[in-house]
Length: 234
Image (cartoon, rainbow, N blue to C red):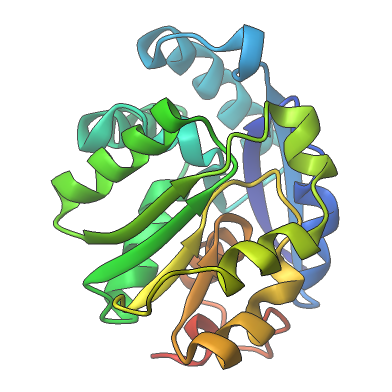
């Protein structure tokens, strides 16, 4: 019997299936549930939690062993308290093992021993500042941060991978331990190995680290498909 992972994502996201699901190893099946939570459907996290609980319960009906709330901006917007409230909502629904995108990012940075990061996002300046505040609160130094202000979900998923390659190539320095390309709705996971080679540093993306975190929570010991140093670090 396969092991099963449940992902709760924004309804506007069009990248998770094509960016993530094919990288799960044989023997692991990922199931996706959507919530209206971004753009015009954005709401305070407290108001979103009942929807999160319902979405989680539906994924548990599919026998998912790990449930991840997978939206970078929403999981970081209200700092560690917001992250904790999302994890609590998943647990209230009965999920045995839980994560958020921000949980996955922080666990990956700890595993990589990365104390400082360069942050690149497709978000507005405000949303990017919310992420930098999350990292500041968590004790991760921000060596460089840029919000590319791509204009919303439609533009995020329409942005070609070459755009992100160019942003990384234009980094003004390498005074950081790891690069984080933030957002589950951008096409960039296929660039990770190339970027790590050019930067000589680990590169993580939202979709990549959620694969890593959910497999870690499953206790997966088999072969791995995804790119990145994080999958080769114990």
